[in-house]
Amino acid sequence: MDTATLVTFIVYLVAMLVIGVVSYRLTNNLSDYVLGGRSLGPGVAALSAGASDMSSWLLLGLPGLAYATGLDAIWLCVGLIIGAYLNWKFVASRLRSYTEIANDSITVPDFFENRFKDSSRVLRIVSALVILVFFTFYVSSGLVGGALLFQETFGMSYNAALLIGAIVIISYTFLGGFLAVSWTDFFQGLLMFFALVLIPIVAIVELGGIGSTVDQVRNMDPSYLNPVDSVTTLGVISLVAWGLGYFGQPHIITRFMAIRSTRDVPRARFYGMSWMIVSIIGAIIVGVTGIPYFAGDPLIAGDINQSEKVFIFFADLLFNPWVSGILLAAILSAIMSTIDSQLLVSSSALAEDFYKAIFRKDATDKELVWVGRFGVVIISIIAILLAYQGNQTEGASVLNLVSYAWGGFGAAFGPVILFSLYWRNMNGIGALAGIITGAVTVVVWKQLTVAKFIPFNLYEIVPGFIFASLAIILFSLIGNSPPKAILDEFKEAVENDNEKPQT
Image (cartoon, rainbow, N blue to C red; front, side):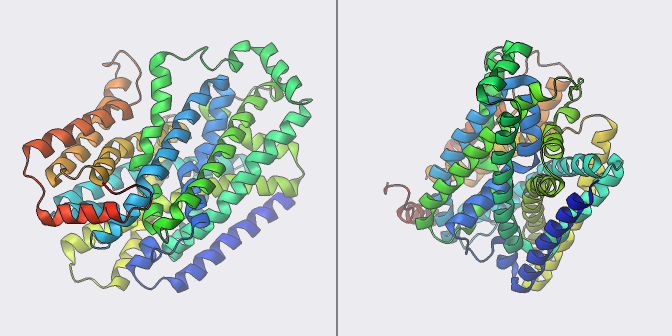
């Protein structure tokens, strides 16, 4: 490890910890810790949402997929871009309006309970359980990405890299809460953007320009440049279906809940989508340029974990140690920007949706903040064990872990969020049926696919989203109609939504 790279790493980490300490001093109550007092401007909301969305898969998983398969990976990107835009267009403003109207809801389970006036608290508890289960897998994917980075950069064993990376990543989340997460994500998003613009440009120049790069890839195997060469119809559907996941990701939609005003949403959407499109294109180019650049020493060798190191190798080989340190810090930025958001949502579910709802209804804000902080530690320990076990069984690729968690949230929460915002006659029984059906379908479908009981490969979010939607409609129609209080709040939320005309 070059000293300059190490120094750059340390400076970056210290800067993130300083933000955590400053945010600690600004965190006075649970609303501050969970939503930052609904004070995010459009730029911070957009980049923090994007950075927490993309995670280590943007700099490790996606370049690795493009390196292994070529332009087949573009279908995943098409789905994500469409899904992200629709999420900003149809969910952001309406959710911001509705969560404030629905008793100032500060978490997703809190919103579900208040939206449907669920006095039994079953809806809150079930949705909080879904958050804890799938975020454990999601956090684990980030820890695997951190382990790959520290393993390759510092020459550590996987297990040592896993532990050190985890300690670094959770420390400032423990301290600062939502403000620390949002502001660090903003700066991390800028760093990720810089890295994904710089590396493709330098790599293409090294290969002799765009034309030369394309010719070299084509000469190795023309199928790398054909986006439909090795994918089936179901394969394309599965990749594009990633876009469905956006509607149900708690760590993304909480940014919508925290934005300063619905009037800021259009500007935030423009910032967020511009950042996302450029970053995704850069990640694809990193992977594709790696095909000819590493032709003499291929990284893949049948191991997805090796192909996911293509960005790391480019950062090491193409730049001097100081720049390399900054680019490698971008990977850590991608990892930290997602894990901190996921840990925060998970810890808030423990504090607000379990501890306060079940055990301590009169708990003080200070008490709940500390319960949330210790929740960060507990969830992290479980995720570390999962990441360690994944390495032992060779199942810990970043993309695989992200895929499972993304599908779980997308199917369990996505249809419920959309119907709750746009269907006035939806009821609490329908919401509960949708959450359970979506989550169970993802788990069962995944296991049946792995066991070869399902003779074709279809991303589990597709049947999960469909079955959850059908369950919402069916149980809402056969259940009781919503009372007047719920209908009045729905009408108010629609009228306060600056993104949609009144209905």
